[in-house]
Amino acid sequence: MTQRRIDKERIERADREAKQLVEAETKARNAKTARLRALRLSAQPAESPAPVKRRRAPAKKPSRKIIEVD
Image (cartoon, rainbow, N blue to C red; front, top):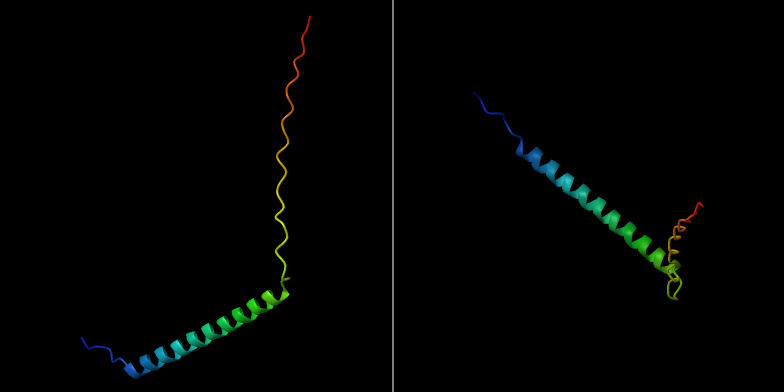
């Protein structure tokens, strides 16, 4: 059986290209996140946030009426 010839340079070049692509995507994502965070912080008022609305208590079930029959 003969072994397959492996082009190590090609594999290394592909690895380098993949790493560069991942780094570029990460850099772009981080830049977008920072831009959106700055935009969100600039849009918020400096005051405290609005008070939290609370839910009403659930309505009580009506009590059963007892009807007496003579």
